[in-house]
Length: 394
View 1: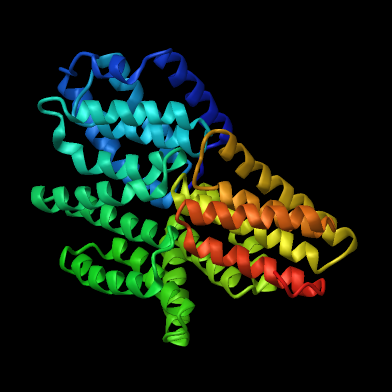
View 2 (view 1 turned 135 degrees about the vertical axis):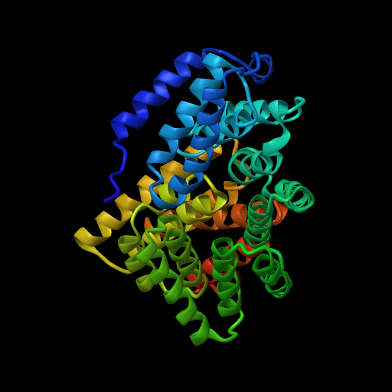
């Protein structure tokens, strides 16, 4: 039976590694000596393979493995596994530990190590981790699209099919999140899935099928068949213990509920889904889920009263505070999310003037930053509210 690592153990090891790291910059790390002990080299490669499995099956073990890999590099020197370990450490700093600028320094270290002679075995994995898990915390999500395509191409050229497929998958995911037209995304997904079949990447393929079924449902295409496929993937994830896959299904189901403003179904899913944010571990999907979760709590609170309303509002406040923290740390991809949530919070509190200001801010910001679908969402939410107030001029 899988036993999750305790929070105490994770925090203890995190503190230990940061003390060992001290104030080292990316350049300092890159200047560490090479690892010349075959036993440690073999251990690093074993940890690298175990980490990939732990990420999907028991995510709480993943940080402990990465901490050990980073420790080995700092104490004994760099090898071809070091670029992956520092990239993954950057991923943990950016996401779960909420230190994006420190995380980006580790991502930079990984990229520098990867350029050293004899260290390029992990080029694709390093590129995948930094672009999928690190840079979106402070840079526009759109900036990850081209590097992920490059990672896919390098993976095909070097025979790293698994890494190539993950670069392609996250690129498709990010195209969806930045609001590319749904018909365009559907065509790309339908072209990509056979490629993953050819590469024999069945687990990776499930990720894209989830997005394809979501896109088709949003477009009103093959809805019943798509629901059955999503339920089948969820059942498979449960039977195989793939917690990350089940989290992604729940995240995309929530996306649909919010799109169609089915707030009752949305709040039921949020309550049953568990800690999706932890399971998606720093991907932009975890950021998106956090926004949808907060919006769900606010909309559910607006249609109830008494103790239940207070509890929902409290849950919304807690989640909004997470997003406020991201904005303060420089996340440009969630500024419009925060404006939408502040508008809906103003609606909940009966502050019409503030609601109008925040909805306007959300529309302007989402448009400026290229999140077309969220501009449309802000318009829909604002229109529904002001119509309910007898204002048809919005």
